[in-house]
Length: 81
Image (cartoon, rainbow, N blue to C red; front, side):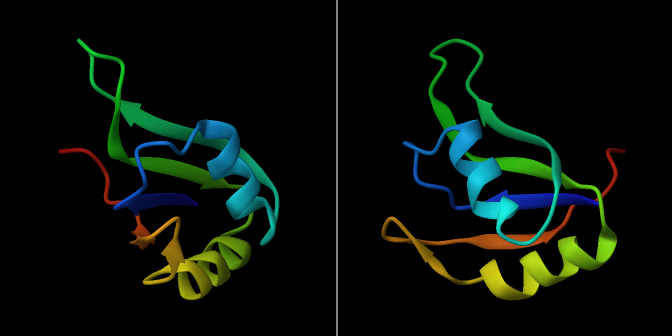
């Protein structure tokens, strides 16, 4: 299951994202999107979880929760168009 994570603190790394979602199940990939020119985080990322059930639980538990002073926006990622 591919999950979009928005409103991330700019200090969050891919390992932080993996640890955050790892409490809900196996994470196969975590990616924080960064600006091509500056390398600074854009404040969102994607997490791939091996189990859809674990992914849905992570979405329910984390969406709207505070993480380092920011309310996370977590939902199932839409396919690229």
